[in-house]
Amino acid sequence: MIRNNELQLTEIGYKKIVTFWGVGSVGKTTMALTFAQTLAKIADLKVGLLDFAVITPSIHLFLDTEDQESTIKLVLKSWQDNFSYKDILEENAFRTEDIPNLLYWTGLTKHPELIEKLGPNQAKTIIFELSEIVDVLFIDVQSDTLIIPTDIALKMATDVIVVVDQNRNVIENTAKWLNNLYVRQVGINKFHLLINQYSDKAMYTKVKIENNLGLPLLGTIPAISKVKYDNLTVTLDSLLKYREIADHVKEALLKLHKKIPFKKKGAKRFRLFSFSNKKDSDSI
Picture 1 (cartoon, one colour):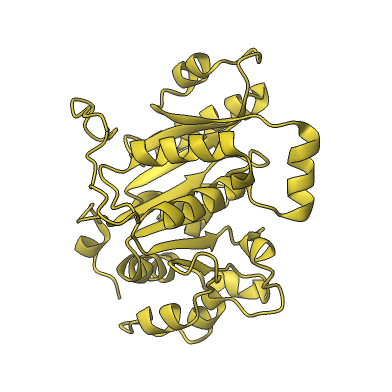
Picture 2 (cartoon, rainbow, N blue to C red):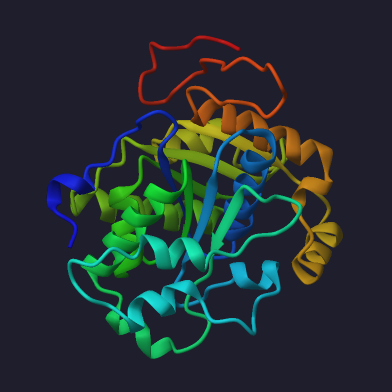
């Protein structure tokens, strides 16, 4: 069982828990996957990606693991208090040959009845154990902040990336959810804004969106044509095939992390801008 004082996770070395959250259909899952893949490719770090979107999990679609049982199911079916699930989670992580330092944990793609077993203690334990396995853990969650896994993932995160686009309804709905979190005393000082499919020609500019939501801007992901984006949705190809998107993702990652040990031999560990301390604005 996780004690309360163990839940206050802070950045020790490169330890981070980064939760991706936003209203539906803004590319939240795609962004979580893209950020995790990018960091694992450029950094000498062990990176993890947890699919905690329990109602509509989709990370397994990108991994083509639809026929395999999820690791979350294994934990829930064998749940016991005061038991460490670190070994189970580590042994049943999904890996790919092209990015061996990236570990995936898929959501409840089968046995949806197990969702009822995913209570606060179970959610806290899973996140805590995974944070012990990897250096940086990315979490994709359901939009509804009242769902237990989403609520716990937002509270335990060291950083929350709020994904939006430039659609008026998206901005308004995101503002409502943020107000709801504020009323529930969920601290939003660790929330950062990421605008997906961004275009300078849209009515809602990044400055206007930033002011409306009251969140610091982490970055923008440039828009690609609707045909290309729809094709990616069908083929499940990576957004990193587009250089302009890859560059913007790297830039956002460098803002999010104070320092990153790059894989290149002899690379220095750069101290970078951190939203947690706005006076610390050292450049690369």
